Amino acid sequence: MNWSRGYKLALGLIFWGGAAWAGPQVFVTGDYRGEIKPCGCSKEGDLGGIERGSSFLKTKGPQDIWVDLGNFSAKATEQGQLKTRLLYDYFRQRKLFAALPGPLEFQKGVDGLRRFPLPYLITNQQRPFPVGARNKQGGGLSWYGYLSPSLLSKGTHQTVWLSDVQNFLAKLGKEKTPKALLFRGPKTELRAILAQAKFQLVLVGNQAQSEEEQVLRFTLGGRRFLKPPLKGQGVLVLKDVSDHQGQVHWLKADTPNDKVWEKKFQAYNQAVEKIFFAEMEGSQKKGKRVYKGAEGCISCHKRQGKVWRATRHAKAFDSLKSVGKQFDPECIRCHAAGYQSRGFVSEEITPDLVGVQCENCHGFYRPHEKGWPEKREKLNRMLCKGCHTGSHSPKFKFSAYYPKIAHENP
Image (cartoon, rainbow, N blue to C red; front, side, top):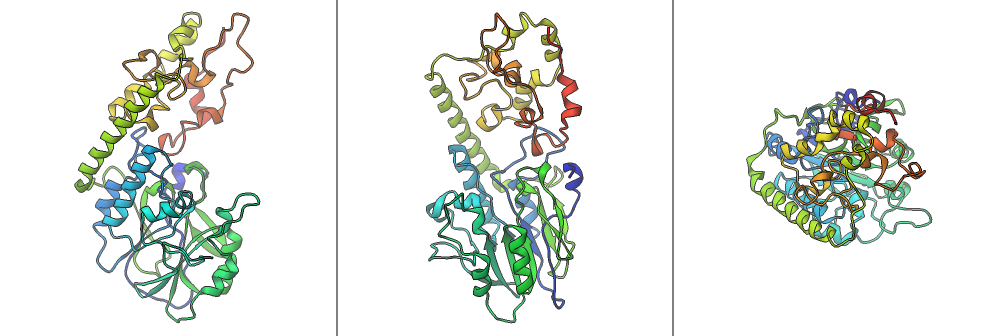
């Protein structure tokens, strides 16, 4: 589906059945995937961020409930750990009621879950689980959580932590209290749950790999379901459980940043800068650089160089500096040539490698007196999508963008 159109759909997956029941408001988030702040690459993708989310969640009343559908953890890098810590602080500060741990949380192992002791809710525990409750009571509802073991198992390896859907159904309580479910798994398992359990509310996580690939609406058993978009870019608010449409507050630029996060983000930026300089020192010991820079190509490919200099690619590092990200390793990768690959080290040490250059698209320099080697990278949509993806470039279409950088071979 079209990404920009998809973001106009309602956020959150809602199923309501049985007798009408009203209660407190329910705030729903999910799939932050380590995103703590909009990157600043595009105005269209300027959504989300825990500073804005924190500001909006101040509207949550004392009786209202905030639940998260998991997969909040960042990558298992030094910078990723800093991001995960900020998200953990965010959940704790804004008093999260329950979180369904996702595969990204389980990747860190049980010890990783212990380091971030959120109010995890996971009913289909197969063995004694050191963190997380099997069910919770809140807002007049009995809350349950189901994470499919298929999302943790790879090949012949089977997870020992989670039971299947049949065991989950057997563990459900028989109380008459209306039930709510946080769910992540395939539709076949959701269908089985809906067929045998009466939940007044079901909220489902988004398993798409990127914003462009996600399908935010689907129908199952004649019922319409909605999924939350990725990366916490909005908050779904249900007036009560009988509100099957919900209302999304998109965390756009007009949502103010909560100032209580200023010091934490200052500390985060300082820590990231230290990571950058440590990597810079290490990269200088990795041997001879293999990236030559655009000027080495342009000395012969003059026409191509003229086209390149007029593109936004040539000024990509300047755009990074304009939002204060010139020391952010996760950002530099798409704004310089060969970062962390025996290329760009820093603006001062390798000024000839700033910006998106020839070698970003065609591979690092190799001697080619008799013609360019066959291993040269061929430009295609997937190569571009390495950087032009999701909120970083939400309007990206290869057919529209490629003509802006296209240049003839000599």
